[in-house]
Length: 119
Image (tube, rainbow, N blue to C red; front, top):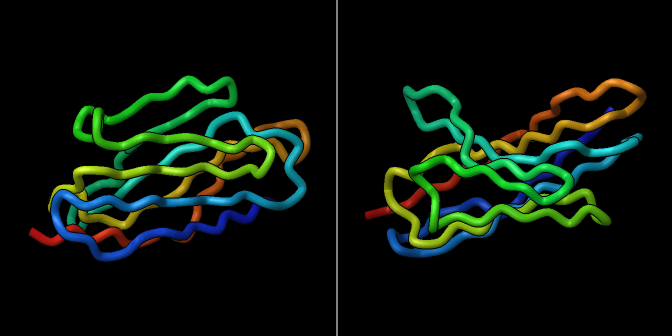
């Protein structure tokens, strides 16, 4: 099994910054991809940013130029640096990790951390 522990959410004014962290632990053989998703009230969960093991990244258009995803492979940790935050970034942010415990990869989710951006 894989456990994900998220931290770093909170309340911030528009234009401010927050940094989210997500640490994976357990009987991990390897981690293929790590990413962040978010879900605002009344909306579907959407991908925010993803980073694969070799470092390639992908961002939602709405966060390009403002958010940066990074990972520390030695610590099995993924980060999301969020700058120039907007009220529309308000959501519960979920960490997602695609990891192999045995042979096959599975997707694991964190418990979610609330990010609230006030105008």
